Length: 155
Image (cartoon, rainbow, N blue to C red; front, top):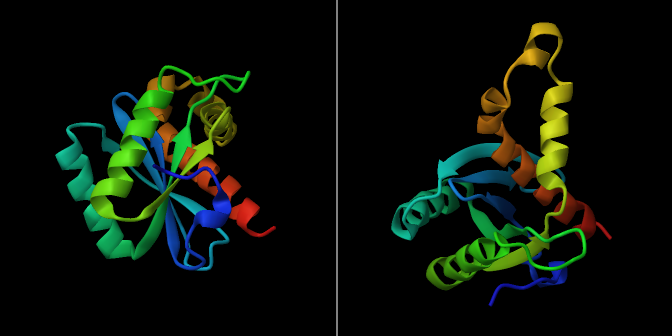
């Protein structure tokens, strides 16, 4: 079962974070020094076999040592309906890929990512539909989740 304790992560190496949505999974990775989280990509949330192959390739290419999966909770702290999806993916990740997986409270990460993306736009760009921002939203949310973990690791 995935952990909820940041101290259980390996002490060195890159960390990958996943923001699990119904249709897509946002992906971010840390640098090897674990100071900076960077949005990487968004992958389709399809069959586990397809997702697993892409994550195996990421592990090989980036030398990933562990994963963080955003756990969507209600503001009250109760599990949201999409929390089951995140917990299921986290369990499969840990079981099939053999790396430590941390479940991380992601309350407001998507809202913060959306705000950050809108703030970057000016004039005509601000009027752009949310659809144009949606492509970036999941991986930016994943990077915000990961940045929270990286900051906690410093203490």
